[in-house]
Length: 90
Image (tube, rainbow, N blue to C red; front, side, top):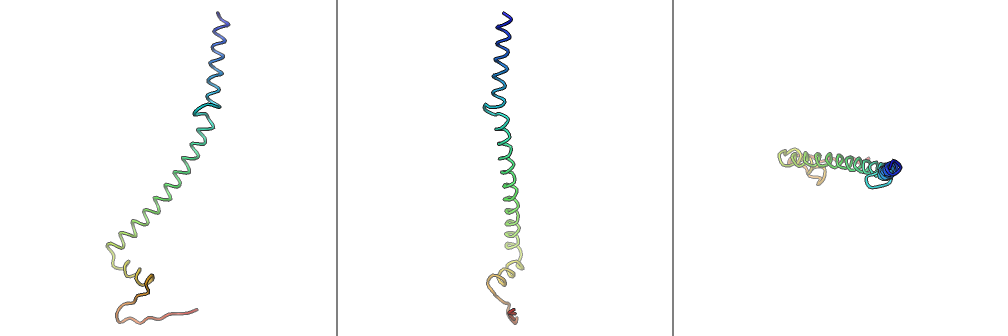
């Protein structure tokens, strides 16, 4: 009777060790999942920073005439009335 109980306990320990090291949700899988989660978190942070910058630019364009004027000057080469345009060539 004791031998059977010891055999069952040994088999249970072997089974649990197998699951810990090689089975589903093993230590190596958990480590891989953690690395992937860290990568996705970093990507999410980068995208959030980019979105925040775009939202700030949109807000500037909606509510600030200076931003529109600046964009027209640099992107389209526009000048104001009664302004003299000077181009410096280096």
